[in-house]
Image 1 (tube, one colour):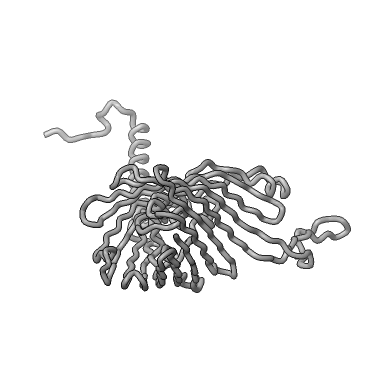
Image 2: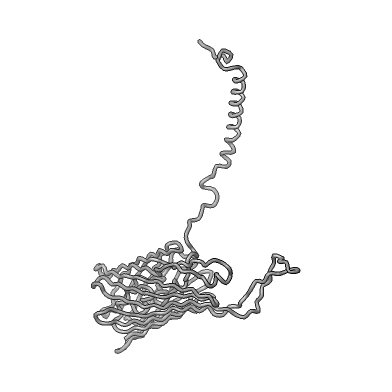
Length: 363
């Protein structure tokens, strides 16, 4: 039996001592780091998980997301698949304009948060052999706001790093505006198509930014009873720049992105009362994919009695503060014209509530 003897190896004794010293220190270092490694190794179940990234707050022209009529607002904000469209459809799904058979005019007012007033108006006319042509307008009035200015405090002409707020400088105002032209027609009896081309502007004091955008919508009647599916792309347009304001405060022009969103929806009449029936019950839902936030789902339902009185409700999923919506409508039909009145209550959680009133007149 052979016994290992370091003295009999070819390595010099001094090299063997250094190798033994190195291995001993390496063993000690490994033993010392083992507890530290266990202590500092991240635990997947500990701490706060990283938040998912989305583009919240990274687009402009946010007023284009606000409700434009009481029926839409009361039914959870569903814009794509309500059916029985009127002139206001040019502001939601322009393909639904095909339901206008002669002339229709709609007006709406929204009492928005912080005493902001939001107005919309639309008119549409059916032309035989051509389709339906409409015009529309959106106007958001922020009202007057106190003008303020931060002025640096100087000491013997040298900045102190502090500032004072001046408030006796009068008032400043802001407003948003969008004007559009719409067209819709029946491609086939089942497929309807519509488009709305609009010019958008925002003004703050003496600075204004403007852009062009387009809304494109479709409605497809599946042939399965009253089931219809819809697709809508809204606010599709190029980025623009807020140049005047930025030049005045000394920064480079900033890009303003359009709040593009795509909606896919479906609606079904559980009870069809168009043929003189007493009751009409519709349910509608849509999936919304915006470019500046997480995906959302809108759901709404509408019950109509004798085509006279409508009760509406809905819910908005995956919103920060929005939730339930409620509303009602009254339809007055005479021999030569129809008059529709609508009201909606929109819950906004900590921000309170929003009220929407609209009226539509048709021939």
